[in-house]
Amino acid sequence: MIRFEQVSKVFPDGTVALRDVDLVFDEKGFIFVVGPSGAGKTTLLNLLIRRYLPTEGSVWYQDRNVGKMPSRYIPGLRREIGMIFQDFKLLPRLTVHENVAFGMEAVGRPHQEVRELVPYILKLVGLEDKMNCYPHQLSSGQAQRVSIARAMVQEPKVLLADEPTGNLDYSTGWEIIQLLQQINQWGTTVIMATHDRDIVNSLRNRVVRIEEGVVVEDNAVGSYN
Image (cartoon, rainbow, N blue to C red; front, top):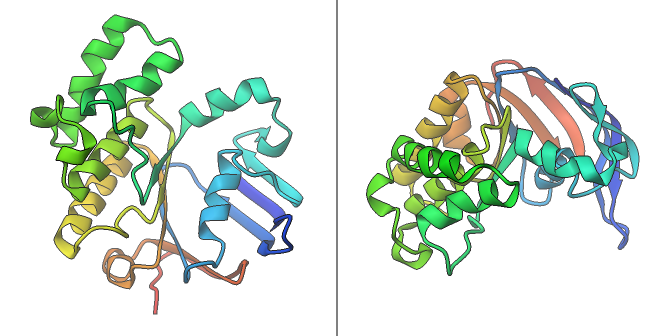
């Protein structure tokens, strides 16, 4: 489903973020990408949504070379591959409902579909009573749930999570992980970048470990020590 073939990424300042990465992510998996800050985890995810282009090699989603995809197809790619962020990236002047609806409206989804689907998704993430709140009125855990709802409302086939528990306390972080597990059980591929050892070692999913831009370990049932 997803392939990285000999992928390297070097930024204009000379920083080598990834080096000769070969990876395959199968459909419907839940994969952890681990490593210290600056290892290249976020770069790996951003290459998949075409935020960056590889310096060398190819990134494939299904049968499409992401790096060579015409720009008019990128919005469609990002509907199929959703992404949630450590810092939430909510629009502060919009309510919870409006934040989730925004992406649907931007791509021209019918108003009736927006009216029906947004409350349904917010109920799934446990925020049906926060629809009219603004981001500053939410806890960090609630804001992250809005971020997840915003990604899920596009019904993506793949969900990328970049340190989704990094700004959360232990208990709230586990609530987010349980939600991601449920989304995975519904059939969505989840790829989560993290350096949280407790979460990785508890779930024992596939673990891809990156250090200094190099994949140094890839275990089907892994840990992070």
